Image 1 (cartoon, rainbow, N blue to C red):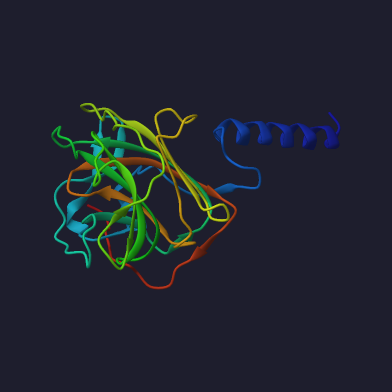
Image 2: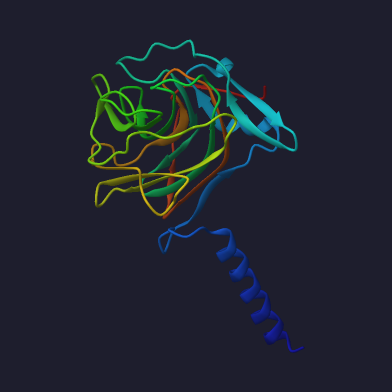
Length: 240
């Protein structure tokens, strides 16, 4: 086979493999900026947390994940979640985030897990609170801006069903030019939350809960670019 034909075949196969690995809904020009599948305990070094001792490396049969096991020993400057693990040293602006999440706490109205984004510091950030039942303090998109958290979603649902020992695919999409924020839960075609705000154009991304427990796996973030963040917001987690 001629060399040019071999090269063309290899390029086509590579493009097909990339397309197969990239889910629908990723904008043109976006590339995979970060991924973490928690194959071993060293993966936890990628994260910094409000309380590193609250997070552990966990195995479930042949798979593994990062697990929030207890309430963090942390007092935020304003009323907001206490259990936060951020991807260390990276700032994201526009992005599509996908992650597998499992809630491991008891069932009640505020049973939750959270996605953190636009995180500048403990007094300036957004978070999406995914809970069993919606009310003014639950199942909404919130902003912490030198004050207690405040919801600002223009659209939400009545809540999500975390179930027992069930993994869920969660997606968050941020477009800073338009100011839009969209959150998806299992059904990646229809958002369960929508909001608009431009207060924090870039920041760290992370995971956690207001005051529950849960597990994180298969983190992937696509975007046009990211920046390196000097310094740390919290303490590195490290192997556990």
